[in-house]
Image 1 (cartoon, one colour):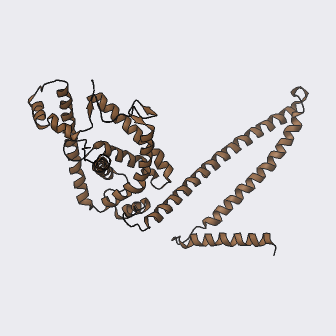
Image 2 (tube, rainbow, N blue to C red):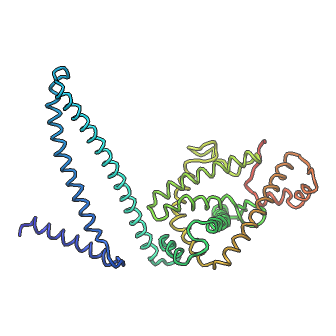
Image 3 (tube, one colour):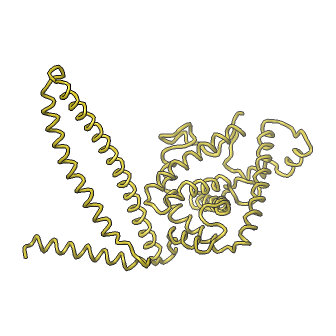
Length: 364
């Protein structure tokens, strides 16, 4: 047997082995021979390309012969044949464009499926590794399966999941910022965004937006999460900074000294950090949170979510009023009502400065 035939025989054996492995994991009673269908499709595409090439060669020869004659030299029958040929070539061109578009869509979809399959497999493998200190995050594909099988109250990206992610993010962001301040400066500083509790809605909004935008890419490769995090984080920082300055005349951060900044509200370096956070978030933090949420019973979880929502609305409203009065006091405006006097007494400047250590007021 020649080396070429032995090579073909070996390739055929490997292909059959791959097909058998796929069939062993197919639990349908009548398994689809995906390998055979794919092979037939490839053969059909190749045969179609060959037929098209042969047909085009015939057209090219006809076009070359027909092109030698000027319009004035043709009789009525020849003009008719020329018109028919031109129409046939135009139709052939449109057919080829349609086929190319269809194949491009199929190719793009196949690349998407391959990327998702590789990503799911990689995430599951990473979740199965043993680590000494911090256990690996569960794979998103495992979380999806558990949510679907259990009919959990916070499945997918519904209202309950969205709000719980927001609440956890509001708390977790403050904790991380405080620990970072301790490591960097040697002391703990408040990073809260509301007057009651260690919560910051900005971090919650970031967690919520990252989860909602990146959720559809949770089982895709990291580059999608990086781009999503880059764009979402930058947009969020800019809008919040602009809103705070417009409403209260204050800023909690200023990147004017950083290169590639836009109005001091965002800069390239922190946008890259947001991109990295996007990958870390959807591949590590979100599945951990989703796993914790899965442990909450359905009835308790729904009631708890509504209680936390009412609390956060109340906390946010009081905080806006307190910051508004703080800004007004700095501008020399006296309380105009008994309610404003109550706010001034309950939230004096000293308390507000402890809560919002980084807040600075400029000219309104």
